[in-house]
Image (cartoon, rainbow, N blue to C red):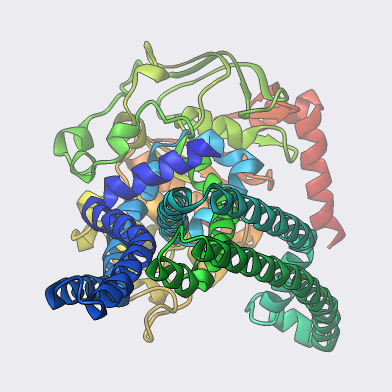
Length: 603
């Protein structure tokens, strides 16, 4: 817990040092106002009494009155100054911390994103991490301010009477215990509602989800979802009312503690003034601050438990920020390197270079299960390779190993004579372009979407249009400056098939030596898929650079175009050869091919 507090404070001072320093100073001065108010109230009243007795001059009374007035004025304006400082701090933190989080996204070893534990951290991070840091800093600042008030009053009580100091500690402890029990019980109830809250949120989102809503309307399931939402909401509301009623029980106990503290303080003060151990001014100073002293106890306990609660939410941020870096992260954090022409033209393939896997195994982080087991094979430059196999056989993981997104758990991967570990990220990404199965759709212009794989061609209309024409003659791809998505009023929403074609065009636009397709045509019908691959093969074959092609497809008819087919099963390559050779072998590939062929014959 302390570790997160320290990291939070360091984060605040790193990204917003000036407003943070101002707020700390304001906290210190605010903390001193309570003890100084008590002291100068005492001095003012005592000086008035002495003035009336003609023992001191009027100037002493006016001086004490002026100092007390300044303290009160400061207390009235400090919140205004603090609010301005917090606005400035939030602005600085939001900008700088968002940049730090985005940079960290680039630095993280890609395999970490497969860890389910990271998904919770990412969900929390998307929910305004700067706000969580500021909230924790606010709690720290409030606790600092209240602590200064506390020790200031203890110092004054100790000077007056040890019984007052002892009583103050006792009532402080009682209030902390009361707050602790209340907080624990209420937090336990809220924690038990986490799953129900998520279910309620999911039900609510279904009614605004453009993919789910048409199906719900067709099946007349909207009333069922609405009823389910209402029933769940009523249960949660009933539990929340129960929480509120229980909280009043602890508020009642807090009131009893307040009355007991007030009675104890009055008793001690009357006893002390009768014995002549305190002045009338000291008596008045303590009486006027009695309520504020009590609320000091309440606010301190609330700040303390608020710190613990906020510490839990901020833990996700630092769990994320502490994840291991990719070995090439420095290259990914500078756009000037991405646009460096020397790197753009740099190639690692020639007629003699091959992709070689030597006894490669791979497991995800924090998992002992091997996704790939002792894989060995060679891919020649310019060759057309197909990877086929059942779901979960390791095909996509193998592609991510080739492109350097994953690091092998054991074994070695070579490009020619170079170990892939020695190659820079720029070298790998400039020689491989990939269309993943879970391709992304970007709310940008068509030009930017097509050029993301080759930013240096962003303003090269001829190159981008050629890449788009390769995959489709759809008129939607004619205007390069057309905005895609609904962020802009005039934006165009692409269909699933159009988005896939755009993803393929993006890969083809990059001047890479190998184009890799991971189920890129899943939304296309078999005829359109075959036409797509035929067009791609024409471009690849006509390229002077002899571009190679690696593709994964569950539709084995497409695999017939490959020079060599690798069949994976349970993380191992169990068959390899051409389509005709594998059919003759009568193994898994032959079985899968015949099963798919029977589907079309039945139709």
